[in-house]
Length: 197
Image 1 (cartoon, rainbow, N blue to C red):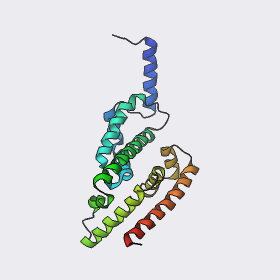
Image 2: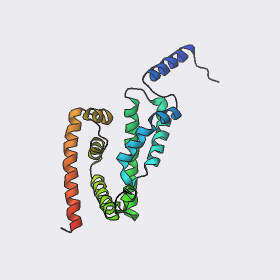
Image 3: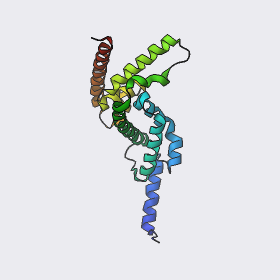
């Protein structure tokens, strides 16, 4: 049996104290209890209706639980979890693009977004609008897609985005400008395609 030396025990205690001071949970269960709502919200917004956000959340927390002992605390725990969520969604989107190509399309994706208070005609229009938005988002570069979702849908500030995405506030502003332009261009092209122009 390998028993740690007194120095190793003291160092471990200092490291644990440092992690606790930074708000790092002790285990995966505590991590889930504290941050599951935030991760679920991010997963829903980043993944859109085409990806099962519950699967994404589960994969995020499995990854976080596995990596928690290596978390250094250089960034906030929410920033770290956001990065994991973003990576899981990106991986899932790549995998699903291939699956959609083989046997389905984003035209079938907005079935779970209907509002029951609307008439059937209004629900169809809402579903078509949601489909259009997500088809436009699906065709965008990943960083632009992410920044527009978090800014426009999640209502994050530029400072929050800069922290979450690991870049400067000015970079976020440039990405947001380009993302909006790219989104508008994609929507116009998709609308023209639907009209048969």
